[in-house]
Image (cartoon, rainbow, N blue to C red; front, side, top):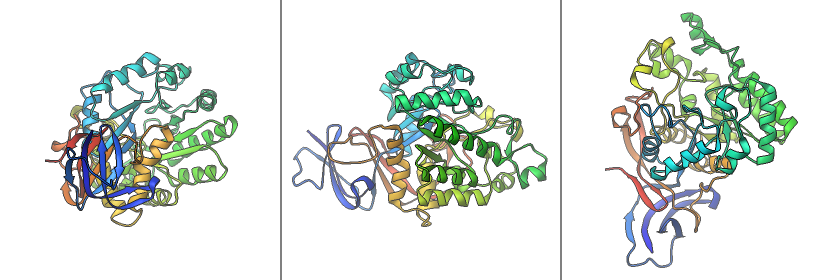
Length: 427
């Protein structure tokens, strides 16, 4: 039985090569038809004239903090924040307390996700207890529904462990998601190693801390034939290394965060060292930002992911060198990308949908990224004409740690639909 007809919305679906005004008929959990020949009498008609309709956004890098740190965030609150930001699917990282490093903990995430506002898929830890010493039971976690493996929050410093993980990756056909920061080069670092660290005397994290690990893992990928995904890249040299690896035919993908696309180390200085500008990897230079943006446009970078990292006020409201790394991003990502990248012509709206929906779904082999007839009715409805001033007090997330407070952005999510149900609607 039909639920809704979204009428006169501008559908952007790169997989179907659709970029035009359409009507979309939703029946139960699924897309029934695009521009249906007839509409059932009981269908509720929702006029979305002047609005864009996107396949629901997929965030492949969310820290939901459950189990263990629910005071920062939990699966329910993270999914509500995601829905408010236009996401219909989130993929949760394994660095919880305890970590998601066994099959029963993968099952726990799925059980908790049964009452979530969005789809939730878990990533399993590469190493037991995230220590980087011994592989977790990757096959058992894959059988229980892990969509990838990652020690994110911690680099995999041991090359033999990384080699073995990639070997399992090839056998299981699931990617290894890596946090590429050399622990020795980055030890005690707080910001990018460059002009700002030199001015302040604060310990810096050199670009080489990232690129040396990226280069190592590309070499290991050649050896194993696995599937490698580089998380939150931040440097121009990382872009070049990945571009070359792709041209060599390696199974490598990567992501970038919105904050690494719109902020630089200069913003840290100008903020007066506001700890909401402290993140890992650190904000880099304007040249790095330019290289990342070019990587988006030319296809080197596959996805935009939030690295949503909630922290409580007492963990961020500290001197810069004592505050936790990380910011939240589920409720600001689409607005920042639209305002700073699409509206300025750096990428077009179709490429944006590829980066924020199509490609994350492909990388993780999950059902999302298109509104073809018969696919899940996971839909983002976006008003490009709205203007919004970012107010952390309006966030659905439990945490408010964002550097974008009081930023004026273009566009607003007005509705998010998951399996044909409206899970968020702007009042």
